[in-house]
Image (tube, rainbow over all chains, first blue to last red; front, side):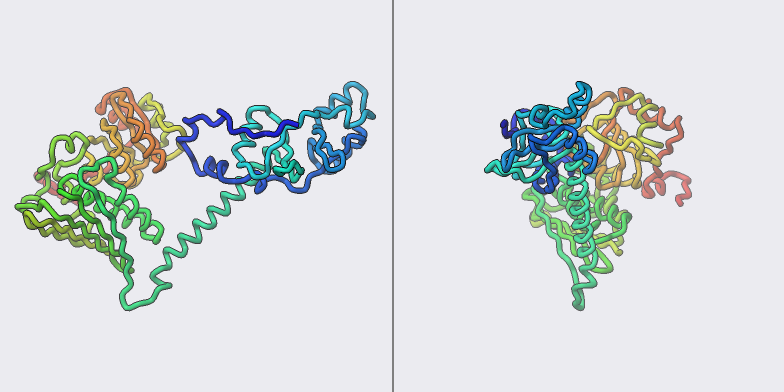
Amino acid sequence: MVTGSLQEKEIKPKQTLEVTKLQELVYELKIEQVMTKKVITVSPEDSMRHFKDVLRLNRISGAPVMSGDELVGIISIEDLIKALESGDIDALVGQRMTTNVLTVFADETVIQAVNTFGRLGFGRLPVVKRDGKLVGILTQGDIARGLLRQLEVDYHEEEIHRYRASHIFEDIVSDQTGLILRYSVKPRDFSHCGEAASKLKRALQRLGASPNTVRRIAVASYEAETNLVIHTTNGGQLTAEIQPEKIRIVAVDQGPGIPDVEQALQPGFSTAPDWIRELGFGAGMGLSNIKACSDEMSLESKPGVGTRLHMIIRL
Amino acid sequence: MKLSEVLSAIEGRLLSAEADLSLEVSMACGADLMSDVLAFTHAGTLLLTGLTNSQVVRTAEMAGILAIVFVRGKLPPRDTVALAEQKGIPLLASKYTMYETCGRLYACGLPSCGLFRLTADNWPGATAS
């Protein structure tokens, strides 16, 4: 018996880079979670004629061959057809079966079975425990069904999360309930710029804010985050206070500060360096964008002390 | 206009590993200035740009851009592709210039997204709506 420990080369690095939800599941789910546990088996002493009836009655296309507790072979509809062709329908299963049985372990992940199916084109794989005991049978159909079932479970959990999140303001009662989300923004770290705004956007979606509101807040906070990345000495903090009727967003930093706030608010005024402009930013439109996206906006700054940008978006 | 129709109009290529080409874009915007994209695009816009850094994807995410076309045969670096994949934003490429890529789509009936109010208000003699 060949036992399949199949972690080899089948998973190419390129494929592992682009992991989708479904691929993730293939790596997470264990074979025992998707296999069929009720295994229909035949004995090597059964006739092929009997095997034919087993296939028909159970609507299956193959079965492991067991001699007592021991897995001694596997037989499929193909073997039956060959027996029929050679007029050998009364032969014994033991004479027609494949004895070199490839199995998978119950505690291996589904990806190992997927690879084996893909490579060898088998219709089914017997599933064994580490001690060799047969505990199930796995077909590609079992895998598809198992994945769909798990996707549904995950989707349902996601729904529940979303439900819980969007009801936070009804479930938690106080005179003034607010949810504060705070993000630290590093200076000049342009490759991560936008992560804070992205997380805030997702949080608002979870809380059930309308798409238009989400977009306004995402754009405003992204512009504010970009300013923190481009202009500050030591970075800053982006804070969103979410209340049932409005969202207050504050971007604070500790310098260098803006000498002329009036001028900074003029559309097109910019002090951004060239490397920022080459990336498509720093055209002096950030603050006017923020103003256009928010219901109230104020900017206070003191050179050498820091800057505080404050905006309110009503829901 | 479906993404598949966009691709045939610009004789372009799909860069994303997988994308739903039946996705509908209702308008387009050609810009290399991301602040402009943030300022005057609407959700459901197709973005055409000559920039390929990952902030283009961030901008698209924030502005609700549905898909991105890189013009002039430019191909984005890995991190841009990875971020787009993560955010589910299809990436397309055109071998034509910005002007011609835009022109081809406009000729096929894909409209421009509206002007940013601030810009429109400052246009001499404009009656901004």
